[in-house]
Every structure is written in structure tokens, then in C-alpha cells.
Length: 268
Image (cartoon, rainbow, N blue to C red; front, top):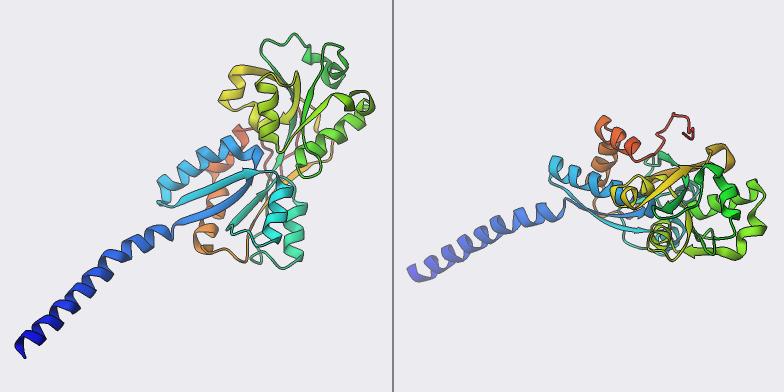
């Protein structure tokens, strides 16, 4: 009988020890959120993610791509906690469909469009968009306007300038604005219409030069974030959303060329 009691006591102790050991692992994994982010956030979010982890201990698993593609994936049940779109219309459509956590839609920034060329290029960027008519140019990189907001803005600005028909045969399209930047950075395109947030990042700043396109020449690239109703970790997602509004992160976003809510987008 004593042996049976001893065995039961040992089993109970083992169970308590198991639960005690497993609890920290569960808590740690609960601090991770999955984020679908527009490709223009590639560089700035590496910095933001590192700061968020340092300050809170929580981690962010980020997938970058075009806003339109993410919108379709989320409609079809993709398991993201948050969606950072480069076009506010996609989050608004998700809100209308009842797919977001109520009250979480937030316009976090307005993006800017630039003309970017490699350092070795002889193109005169002081000409602005007219430089795209230079006969030495064979390929102009833009993001696919069907699902990338910066691509739609690029087409709009070319039409506004009255040169779209003259250059459309030279356009090469990236799946998103990050891939578009790779096209021109690698030499597979002579010039690109890119997001300012990519152009000012160290890697691209060192390998090329750019000029901003006046923001009045294309529709505002208003970018918004939402927490999805299907999010598995809404607590950490809300914590990250609050973190984004902190003075430190607002200043960081501004340093990457983003116009923050309430500010006026002026080219300089």
C-alpha cells in the first residue's frame, strides 16, 4: 500500500513539474504575431521589429508583398494577425466585410514616389519625369499597378505628365515595390519609380540617387493597418499598434520618408 501511495505521489510531482516547465514556453510563443506588410516597409520594419522585441520581449514574424495580393489572401483565410497595407482601400474593404477587429483601422502614414537610378547612370534627374523620355532608356521599372499601390501611383503620375503612351512599351513590372527596386538596382532596368522609404534605406542610398516626384502629381498613397478579427494574438497585436504611435517610432517612420497622419506631403 505504501508503495502505491509513493508511486502516486511521484506521479503527481512529475505532473506538477511538467506543467511548471511547459508554462514559460507557452507564454513565450504567445508573444509572437504574424504580420502581412506592404513591401515599402521592408527596411523600416526590420528596425521597428528589433526595437519592439527589445522593449517588450515579443517578436514579429513579417511577410512582405503587394497589398493587393495580401488582401486576396486574407479574404481567403490567410492566418495573419495584422495587415499593413500601402493603400487604405484594402483595409476599408476588409472592415466592410467584417474581417477586422472593430476600431483598429489606423492610417499610419502616407508614402511618397521617387525616380531612382543607379549611381553610374548619366541620366539627369533634375528634368523630373521628362527624363523618362531619354532615348538611352530601354527599361523603366514600376510595381504592378493591378495589386501594388505604388504601381498604380506610378501609372497615374505618368498619365498626369502626359508621357504614359510614350513610355508604356518600356515598362517592366515587379510583383511589389521591393522587387521593382531590385530590378533597377541590379541593372535589369535603367530607372525606376520607387517608394521613397526604399530609396533612403542605406543599401539603396549607397548604390543610387533619386529625386522626389511632387506629391500633387499623383493620388495620395495613404497607408493603413488593421488587426484582423481572426488574429490569434490580439493582445500583442494591440500592443504593437500602440507601439507604432509612440514618439520614437513616429520619428523613425519620418526618417524613412513617410508622411505621418496630419502632416502635409511636400516634395523636397
